[in-house]
Image (cartoon, rainbow, N blue to C red):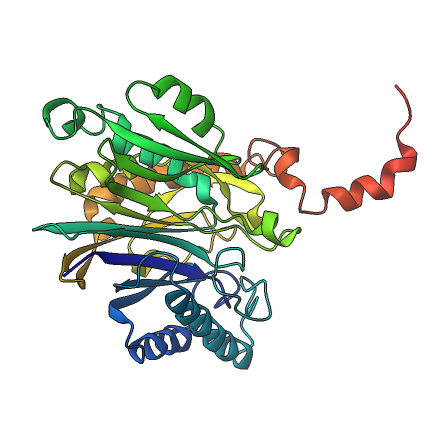
Length: 361
């Protein structure tokens, strides 16, 4: 039947209440819009925090203008509902007045991959709120390069040769491919700085797509701070790729990510069910959901809400303990982000106001 494309596009077009969730009318509007399209094989609409996530399967390939316009029009329709309900930040992720052939650069985050569907094709869609694309760096490293997380790298002959990591430099708009395990230490030099270098995709050594993420940074596109980017990630599992449990395991120990309140703080990425993806404490802490699907001729069989599992209760407890400690630091680093990351907040205005009061020491 040819290749199938999985496309996940997200946007914040209005929060309910504040930044904590998405009103059901917006989700219903998104479902109605997608259900009318003859382009899709299947779809699922969900949310994490105040972001709407459109999970779509189709046979139009990646970067399809028709699919991207469908998502854009869906978010525009949702924005109109958000304005009617006077929701916070209605349409804030839509940085352009009109669609121009591709949603890349227009505000919404996008992750998509095209492949031949295997005999059994399990995928996991991860979606996060109150953080940025670099939040996926550590989990993807663990899934595809850390044998202490993924034992398949040691004992599965199909995985033993390792993987290829495509890393983007978000500031200079360049990319580089690292081969693991050969380039492992070089890879870590870069992905350990997730504010600038992000893992875009992971491939097998034979070139088969294994995972892909959204890497849009709204502040770099808009030239001002308008919210963190709340990234999405698609991971294929099993049969030469990480097992489902190996793909989920990195989230059992929460790591620190940038975002949280006003996008200006570090905090733990807490794995939660969709029902609990409603950040409220200091507009957080940052949340991540994981929805599992079996693909069957492009149909999305599922989802299974993986982080609803009680096995992640301890991870949530740990995240809350970390949150308590980080909050105790208030406006001091490392809870507040370092100055380079504050460039799109009030810092430039304060510096301008005080420039004449600085004298040579």
